[in-house]
Structures are given as C-alpha cells and as structure tokens.
Image (cartoon, rainbow, N blue to C red; front, side, top):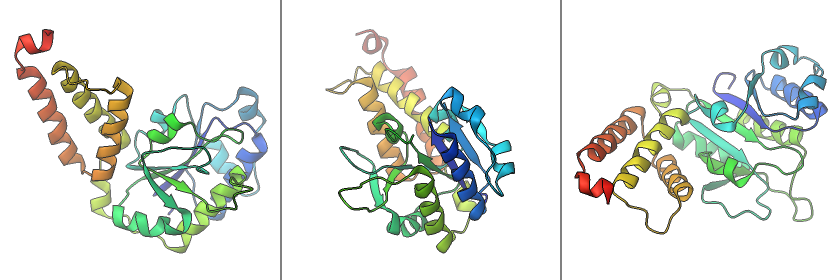
Length: 239
C-alpha cells in the first residue's frame, strides 16, 4: 500500500487539516503526499503532525491537478455527490477494494478537494473514477482528514497486489497525450458535431479510462491518430 497510493489535496484551506491528513497517512504507511495550489498562508502554517514529520517534509507542491496526476495510472476523485452530475464510474467506498482488484490500477492517486467546496467538476473529470462515502442525507460530506483515514482504512483491509501488468498501464500524462492527438485528428477532419473542444476531450478521457488500455495500446492509438491526421487530403484540413 505504501508505494501504490498517493494522497492528493487540491487547494486545501486549513493547515490543521493538512497535518491531520499527514498523520492519517502515517497510520496506514502511506508516504506520498501531493498538494495542489494550497492557499498561501495555509502551507506555511502547517505544523508537523505526530509521527508524520517526514510526510510533510517531503510533500510535493503542484500548481495544477494534471501535474500532480502525471505519473499515476489511476486516479480516484472523492465527492459527496451533492448537486453533482458526473460521467465517471461512481464507486461507494465499501465497493472500492473490489473495483480496484478488477482494474489492476497501478500507481493510484486518491484526490480530495478543499474543505469548503470540495473538488470542482473539472477536477473530477480529470480522474479515472469517483468515490463517495455513504452518509446520511442531512450530512452528506465528512471532514477532509476523516475522509482520508476512511479511504486508507478501507484499502488497508484488503491490500492489492502490485503486478507487472499494473505497471504496464498508461499514466495520466500518457493518456493526455493520446487525447491531444485524437483531438488534433478531429480538428483536422472538421469533426466537431455538437460538442465543444472541452466536451470532446472529457468524452475521450472518459472512454479511455473505462477501456483500461495498456501503455502499448495507447501508444498505437496515438501513433495511428497522428499518421491519419497527416495523410488527410489538404482540402479537408483547410475546409
């Protein structure tokens, strides 16, 4: 579990919560903390949590979520589902270990939004799937550190094997390069339909995530899209 999972905090607001998250990670042997665009006073005010000094010292800072996910092969957005209409696979926390066993997920990011607004829809769309913690309707969300410790506990109960097949999965960065090539092909072919560029990219990302392609399979798709765009008749590209 230590090497397979990383915790990603997106725009955290409360330094006490960041320290509590680090301690929750230490409880279950996780070491890889990634923090995206924290509120400026927040990060400087974080104090070391008991037993988690090394986690805070080695935490990585990123300006945007795609950078934090670049080397991950699977990413799981956490959300309460309140007022959300999402396209990703939705997984209740008790079902998460079984879902991961079927995916051979490789390096996996557990992504958490800030304490006030959670993850944006745009953040969630970047992730492979979304996880929600079943709660009562009157109180649909839980504290950030509590959410982290609940996910860590659930995953620690059923540890996953990290196989060679898992390592052969494409990373987020590799998948995004394929999306760029496919988007370029659609633009060259003037295939715009009724979708905006962002909608096309979100749809492609959702399809690729659900298809669970390996690095080699995605490389083949990327190369095919690039070659096809290059051989389109010039009049088609300029139309």
